[in-house]
Length: 225
Image 1: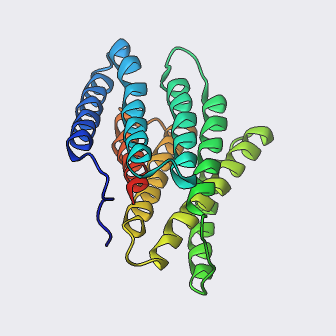
Image 2 (image 1 turned 45 degrees about the vertical axis):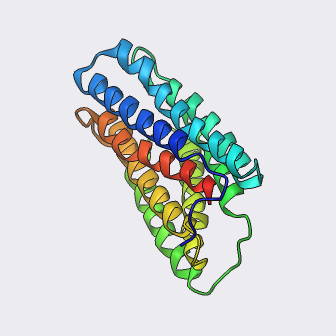
Image 3 (image 1 turned 180 degrees about the vertical axis):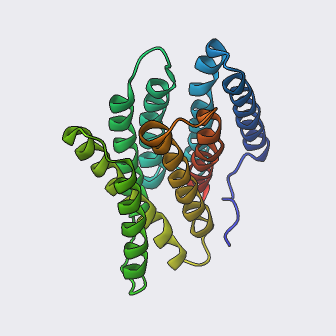
């Protein structure tokens, strides 16, 4: 697999990665203990720390199309994170919209240079069946909500498709980072969906972020390659 680019600040990356891990750990502790002021402060800081990693990638290797679209996605997701973290009021639909836009930005990044291969039919079938099963499980009585959730599931599956399609490109580290990130994202969103539509999961936000934050981190790191 390719290494880091020649122009790469190892010390700066190490500091940013350590900051991400520290902020993420503190955020999870606050969320687990139900300390809302701490959770509200550190939740957007986790995503901000990931944004800084992507910005470092842009400074190191140039702010190309892939990195630009990832940054757009990260900024949109930070808005979604802020909306969804609020427990005093329900901003689920607003957060869903911003995450929908996040995945569209990621699709734009991941689809760069895409070429269809025959095995992609199998990938589409697996993702379609998985997305359909999740949608069937979480359908509500509201057709408007069903439409919004159905659209989101389709876009999430599309993002995962283009992420997994990178394994066709051996020799690039993105072939590992992006499929893993997309899988973590899908697990995170599945936990969120079950908690929202099926049954409440104790400390669900902790479990959601256990998969979500590393997914975002890996996507940001992929900008270096």
